[in-house]
Image 1 (cartoon, rainbow, N blue to C red):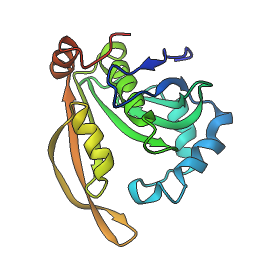
Image 2: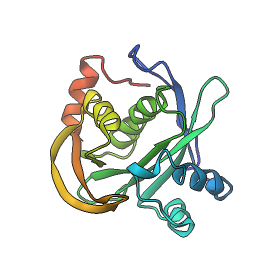
Image 3: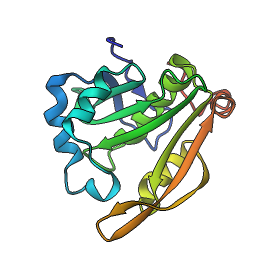
Length: 187
């Protein structure tokens, strides 16, 4: 994908942020790695090596995006989708990392990612996992219509031992119902 995805103006006053997703370029990888390795983000993710990000940019089953936000649409984070070619139409939000927490960029980027997943890539199911102690992200995902499916107990090594992951998802019919209720943008 080489075109920019349109900026999203959030329909909710809880997310006034303006964002757009653009495909990540090789020249963006230093930025991606710096955001990913920021000490504020490390408790919530398992960082990738540069070669993993390079592969995600090239491999057709992945979509690697820079999140651009604010009035100047500057880089504010990145996100990765996996399963874009899945015959099961099950697409994963593998990673979303935002620099400025609390500015609404994550929520706005999630809304654009849902449109990409369901409208552009034809997903039946859009899913993610989130560490159980990441209450802020879990709250955003829940308020954006994701449903908790279960917990993968102590499956990733954290700084203080093992962390558990909550698996959350949204189905295409649920997305369509939210859109019909005016909770999802059509732009």
